[in-house]
Image 1 (tube, rainbow, N blue to C red):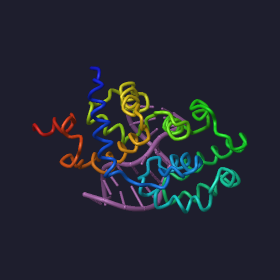
Image 2 (image 1 turned 60 degrees about the vertical axis):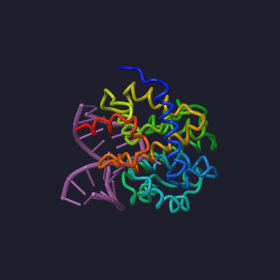
Image 3 (image 1 turned 180 degrees about the vertical axis):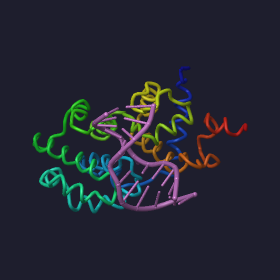
Image 4 (image 1 turned 180 degrees about the horizontal axis):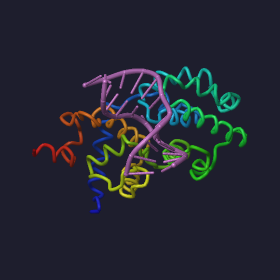
Length: 222
DNA sequence: AAATCGGGGGG
DNA sequence: CCCCCAGATTT
């Protein structure tokens, strides 16, 4: 695999941040005033679910479960039932339940490293990355299908089927978000993926990145 | 690598 | 109607 030059990474960062400034989405959990509790549990809610769906559901959930303490007093079944409208409710319910019990054992203190987060049952590498990014304030990629698609279209495709284990995507995503504003870069990529660089019918014509995008420049020659 | 979980929104 | 969505686990 050919090495991607730094200059191409820098340009990608500059252009997408500029686009984000004008076109980025606004969600409650992105607000700096959102609690650490909110920043983490929303990542579970968001799994395989459109962000807009969660945006409509988020305040209802917070009214019922505003804190780790409150959440840890709920039964697994109750949480699952509350999550029904957003789908994948049994799994998400179990995740939140186990996480809340874990927090209760630790007297409400977060783990100190991503390794501890990944040790919690049903908490994978995406949550661990989100934890590093939002709680520890370290650069880490929110590498989901969305980000994978944007990066692959722009820089070139991965080798493995599974996003999590592809070394090319892992390194590339890390290099891309390794920036002074890692959260903004992450949000910018996710937003572009949801609004412009969509899986079906991507709107390349209005895409700020098309000039240097492999996907666009391959397709335009047909 | 493929199946599975899942309701809701969009085309 | 079918496809897709801020994933993770099991086989």
